Image (cartoon, rainbow, N blue to C red):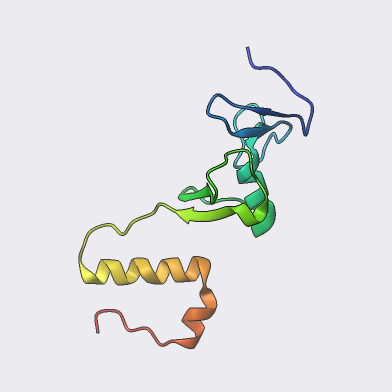
Length: 112
């Protein structure tokens, strides 16, 4: 039986990560409304929810150090296939998600 904890209550899970209770309905939370604190901090830093391919990495390796300056956003997506056209399209999609201003400054020709 899952335990209902008050919002904001923190504890360490079996992997040594800090969990925070009370986030039912948050896309990055578990079914019981708990969320990994480092994922919560990153969503607050970004001002949006994490995508399915995004992970949060602790720079110093300390799973309890969830200061924003100790966290990095990682992406685990990969292009489907190894054709140059596939890799170029994948790179354009990454730029659209994370650096759209870079696309505005550079004309991009696929297959050129």
